Amino acid sequence: MNRLTAGLIGVIVGLCLASGVYLFMKYRPGEQAVPAPVAKELQGAATVTKECQRVVTYPGREKALGVPVAPGREIAAATQLPASRYPHTVIATHTEGSGAIDLLTRRDTLPWFGLERHSAVGIAYGLRDGVSAPVIRLDGRLEVLQAKALTGELLGNVDTSGGYFVGMRVEYWLP
Image 1: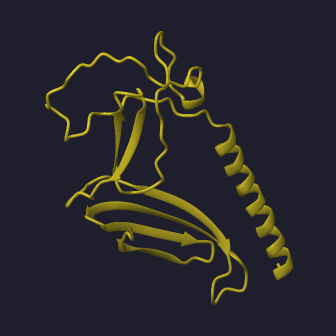
Image 2: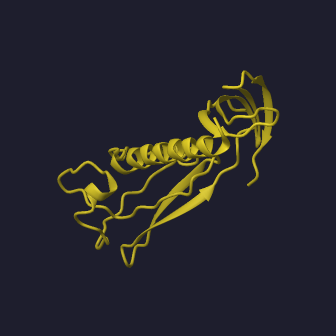
C-alpha cells in the first residue's frame, strides 16, 4: 500500500469517526436536572424563613434546562460551570428589596487524597517511526490515585505494527 492510499484511508476513517462523534453529541438526549446536595458549609446550620414579596423568574424554561415540570415551580436562576477537574460550589443569594436571586460560583480546593476514578480510551491513526505503513493505535488509561493536583494513572496502548506499551504515568494538573 503506498502513502497516498494510506493517507486517503486515514482521511476516510477520520471523517467517519468525526461524523459518528458529531451525531452522538447532536442527537443524544440531555441529562435531567437533579437536586444538588447542600454544601458542607451549610449542613446543620440554622435557617430563617422569610416572606417573599417579589421574585424574578423565567417561566416556561424548564424543558430547555432539563428540569422536570412540577406545579408551582419556575426557574429563578441557572448557571453553567466551565468543564474542570476542580470541584465547584454554586451559591444562590436572594436580595430582599428586589427579589432577585443571584448565583455565585467558587472553585474549591482539591482534596488532599482522592480515589475518584477517571478513565479514557482512544484510537489513533498515523505514522510511526521505523514502520513503512501507517498504523492504528488503541490506548487506554485509568486514574488510580489523586493527591491534590498530582495524579497517578495506569496506561497502555497497542498498535497494528505489533508495538505496545504498558506503564504508569504521573500527571500534574495546571490550574
